[in-house]
Image 1 (cartoon, rainbow, N blue to C red):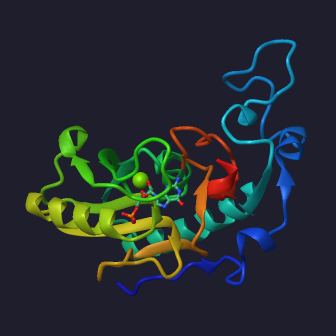
Image 2: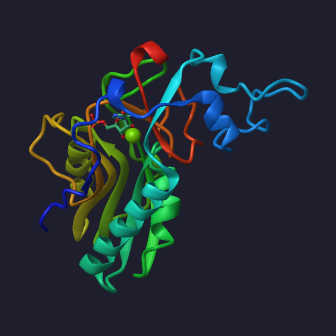
Length: 228
Ligand code: 5GP
Ligand code: MG
């Protein structure tokens, strides 16, 4: 399978050069609402400000751009698999939003499973040691498996997962990611399907978190250490 590069997101984009949307603009536009967790009745909708300083959020991909990207991603997967049954294996936790949107656009018979893998813990934006927990995983022997993850950064998570999963002897093993960070890869392994290539910035939203928050943002925002 030829790896798909995916749409390139504004390759010259830098955090400081990006269009800025203040948290309060985001809240006004409905991206964050007064019914978010942490909000108390009668207080302004300032959920984000409890952990992120009153600062700017830079929207890297809007909700609509993400949906278009997921649509293109699903078309590539549909073209590749046709009617072949597939086990879609989502890497917890960042891929859950993508998983929900992607599978509704896939047309082949499919099963869904999850596998736990994590290299980020708590309040850090740089990877730590990788842990893989296959306990929740369905049987994948003699199945065509499509691993789904949120982002391909150094590539270590997907490369290690793919190697580990091959022990269960699936018929085939491919992977699809929403995002690939430019110039960060440290492994030979490449995802087979990718929706967007983004610059090397830390992103939150659409399933991706910082310290387990912001997964519920419908758009993708870039944050800098100084924002956190
Ligand atoms: P990799 O092993 O490719 O370096 O990292 C993959 C995992 O790291 C992803 O599944 C994701 O959970 C996390 N990750 C990498 N880059 C980012 C980022 O910019 N934002 C967030 N929230 N998580 C990231
Ligand atoms: Mg992840």
